[in-house]
Image (cartoon, rainbow, N blue to C red):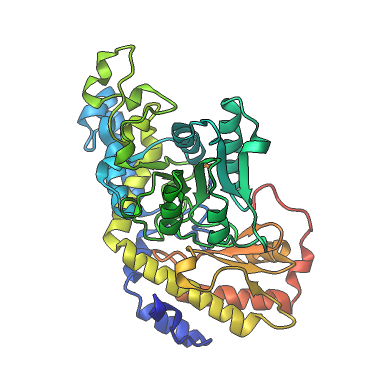
Length: 433
Ligand SMILES: *Cc1c(COP(=O)(O)O)cnc(C)c1O
């Protein structure tokens, strides 16, 4: 990793072109639809559509058109096994065995399903440990998990505090793993600052104390390498629409370590049934001994189809190469901010860890006018996202963004400040930012 932080960058446009000419993943860009006239830097919120995803959707539509219900067994990838097959593909990205991953549900539903499976308050062990920088939906879900057990979330949901509102100190997290904690549930990458937590260390420490641990990997799968089996993580889940480019609201994934296959799924449903007996239609539930046992309903085939195409691309490119380029792009972005935008009148700062092993795929650029600057960027055709109070998130995605685009984003930022362009925008936030 050290070589990555030691790149010798330059601030010139020529250098951006040089970086692009040396980029081993360059050929993948043309397999994506880049919205015309834009520099898309928001792949950490919604990844772009690829031609591969488009053709898997068209194939499924055609199968529905021509096969009707027979598609469940006769489609090229039979719909009956589609969730498990996509799980097996995605397992390669996260260091898991094929039967430990399934494409199912949505992120928040999978939090309910898995945390409820592991959260069995007993005696003194009644608490869930999460963190105060977590994505809100995760916290809402954890509170309701606790309430469903008849317990008080105010007492039983412990949020690890952050000293600076940006980062979490893993040692602090471990200090809070006491004999009252039943489950630890944390994000892999903090959605604002982009800090990547040390999942291996946290898992080891949780297990030393007899605590189960799971991770929300929405902001890391598809751009960071994971080794769930090696790290011995108990469970994990992630969405399909960020770095996995699976389409808006598309099917999510869950990982269940095989040592837990014998547990009862907390939210049972007929698609979790042992596959070859599901259509016996027995009223007693016998769940599949695989992550597939944690499915609830019929798989959303049309919302899963795009993921097939996009996983194909990611596996072809290789997650190691994707991570390498991602780190190089984010290093380059931070370098350009430091060199050209850190001083008066620009005053941009970086709110993302500098060390390669401590950051995910995006960079948080901080500025007190972040909201209006984000609007000005959009007006110029650059798509970032804004996270209150002061963060412009920029995600250069290795499969489809270029170094030259990163360079241009920096020029746009400079020009916006030079011309005070952001001051023309209202101070109220839009519905979706
Ligand atoms: C994107 C994201 C979600 C989104 O949840 P959905 O149920 O897919 O809407 C939840 N948690 C985290 C950490 C995320 O990054």
